[in-house]
Length: 213
Image (cartoon, rainbow, N blue to C red; front, side, top):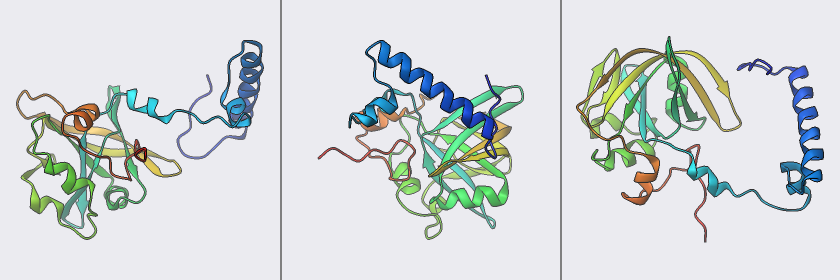
């Protein structure tokens, strides 16, 4: 497999991908399957609802804004490696937190629990940190140099070591510099947030899908 390059594209890589897509289309045609290109030509739409079958959590991604704590909600975060421990998190370009992470080079992830106060999600997900002092509305502490939400399962503090820009989001890679669990609470999943809490996704969320009319 070709090596993945986060910053910058490689012409040879694109050619290999295009060649791969062509081969897949031929194979699909011979087996009565429909590839993405074929579906587009037939006017068919992909079923994006299947994305909800992926597993997500509910997190508060935090950082500093000139000495003031700020942050936003996120549902796309994952551990990439164990040694050194590395975390990836996706943050929308329109989130003020995105700009602040790029300036500070650090972020923390507070892992919300099933019994975390639901209003935390609204506080960090439905208003901008540029205009609102979000942390004034929740209990928090500074741990491993980062502001973290105390009403959570725990936190992971990271230093940015790389990033990748997509059309709408920045994926930050962070090397873990500190972490702690707050008790033994069940982490909130994105499914739990929707089905039990009956919450909605902010439009800046990576997994946002408009509600069916």
